[in-house]
Amino acid sequence: MSGEGRVAVVSGGAAGIGYSIAERLAADGFIVAILTRTEGAAEQAAEEIGRGGGNARGYRADVGDRAQVDAVLARIRDDLGPLSVVVANAAVAPKRPFLETTQEEWENTLRINLTGTFNLVQAGLPDLLAAGAGRVILISSSSAQRGAPQMAAYASSKGGQLAMTKALAMEFSKQGITVNTVVPSSIDTPSVAKKRAEGQLPSAEEMSKFIPVGRMGTGADIAGAVSYLASEDASYVTGQTLSVNGGSFIG
Image (tube, rainbow, N blue to C red; front, side, top):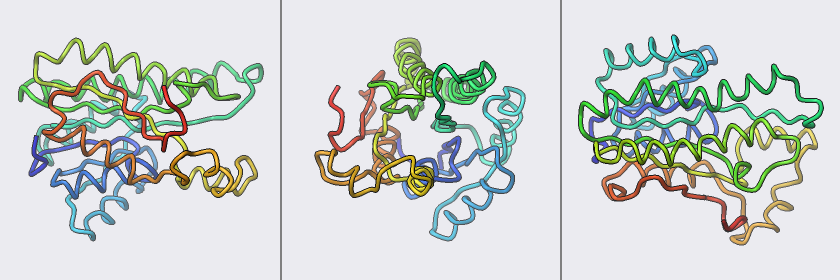
């Protein structure tokens, strides 16, 4: 699958890992539709990518709201054409002791992270099926593999993505569609830097001591994995979990 002229949608693509993914896919030749629920953020990100020579458009939508997803994908099809790649990256990551987690917090985390993935993938799949080819790439978290204290809702939602990957890969492989998950860990993003400044996380230097490759990851590291899975080189890869973590967790 060449990126040239094909449309890729990236949810949560205005900042952090999502922005790095959008930027890389644009560099690969894709026309990238960036989704975010923050007013003006997707448009600003698309402009930045455009200044770097990439082709991107920004759209506002809350992936947890199916009506918004259906409406925004209809706009994207009208503006850019049918989808070829769907990257489900949008997520929230609340941190709260399990016994203090409210049902509202639990349901909102699953609504955005897991139901949002369902909404985006199900609404985008008809384009891929019509073409007889396409890529679905989910962005999960190492929290789903090894757990995370005070993040039961987040880890559960990300674990659901891993199971969804296996099920969809089995269901759609004969239609030319691959479905895979990238699992980041120890990635130095703006949200991580914010938590570090608030004293919730140790310094990057301290964290790097526990990572075999000796450094924290970057958004570009995750984007490189997504670029591979979106390419023709990955046409025989489906139902897989690609952990991008510097060796910090083997499993």
